[in-house]
Image 1 (cartoon, rainbow, N blue to C red):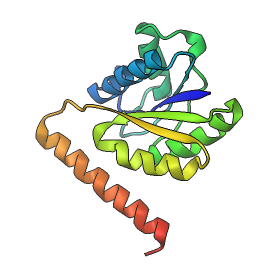
Image 2: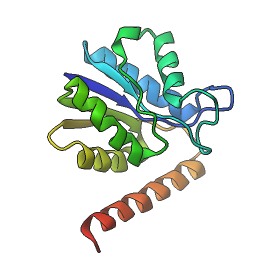
Image 3: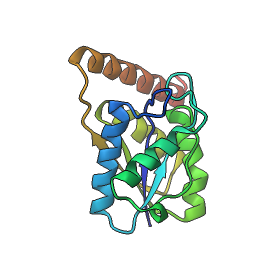
Length: 163
């Protein structure tokens, strides 16, 4: 059974999804349409850097995707995480509980490598495919995100090898 894991991105104080979050949702919609019978596992709880509302970010992802035609029964519970490391860790018990053998992890192009590293580390034995949305930000903003991701992934790999 396949789960489409939709990684969180910011929403505003009213729950309106950022452009990055909407891009990821649209990518998840494409994957859902290509994989009939799959389930959607949204991620995202709260954090000063992405969601300060009273509802978890995954709620807003779910609501957005429902407006795009994904039925309620396609969703499993949300992994109420506050960062990518928690995304992978908190998804693992949900994946095990539902018996998912394949994951399609939906994230942004600039974030794909780190997400893949973390999900492979946390979910050994599960087939993991990355599905990256194209990020439509000004080039200077995108380059800052790319640099951040490269540094974060290098640090994770360094910690993994103990060097």
